[in-house]
Length: 396
Image (cartoon, rainbow, N blue to C red; front, side, top):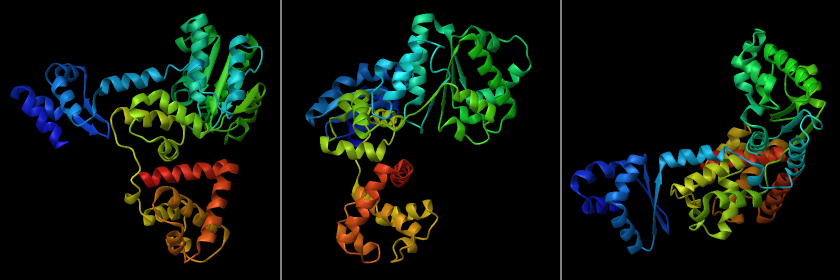
């Protein structure tokens, strides 16, 4: 922001301004001015030489000044990884999973062993896994929990275990009360890794150790996962977790972003969440961007119908001309309804205008198409994911 930089340069000693000013990223919204500095050293310099004068400048324009250190933001992100059940936001799509997690904390290794949680990215599987682990560590110490990541297990751990030597990993396996295995899908078609995990599961079940797995889909749907391993996973309890509802994601954003949401009107929050944060992982990223002072409002005038129809045609591998034509084959009709729904959400086009853009259809036909698309979102989770993916693609 040239005006902010200019004011800073005129208010602090020249030798300080020459090095301080280029290091700051300025971001402005209707009520906030945010100065983003790269590290704690620059934060100290800013607070010593520039904070007071820039607060007065912000106050003159009826705004508040916020200073954000990138290092602090990274630490905040790391702290968010220490998830607990107390910080879990209950939602109709995760109530059963939450109950089962409480159960394996109260009665480890007795019921629901193994416990397998599955669902799409951003639904909260890893949060629950870490929350259960945190509960065990609080009661029994850090050594009571062993974390295993599917990718690391395939590339390193399985070979180490296959040597049959007494290694730190094998010691950790022997001593752990809870074994958490995240992202089991990485084991698909990896014979050695599946062999070693099969032995781990058998040993842990014999010893009464609790097993907790996560994956993107039911264990018996993971491609090229051996039947005997899938059967072992099925001996316990498998629970699907859905993407949290809009209201839950809004509550989570409020929890993380706090006053950084002051610039966003209440009526605009649902649209912001639906377009920018389709899952909980994206909500965290959205909160961080808001805290850094980014303007994330959707400027509908900047989103063209051409961009929308182009993204949809690429997704469905159709020609743009097919979507805007009068053809009514099933794939084209679905793509056309998707295009109309996204255009209605992301642009200022009226119904009559949308009708003219897809073959001269009247507004009654457009209303019917929009209703069909909305109903499909409610009853078809795969289509709902498609809308989320396309929205993110269109917004860039």
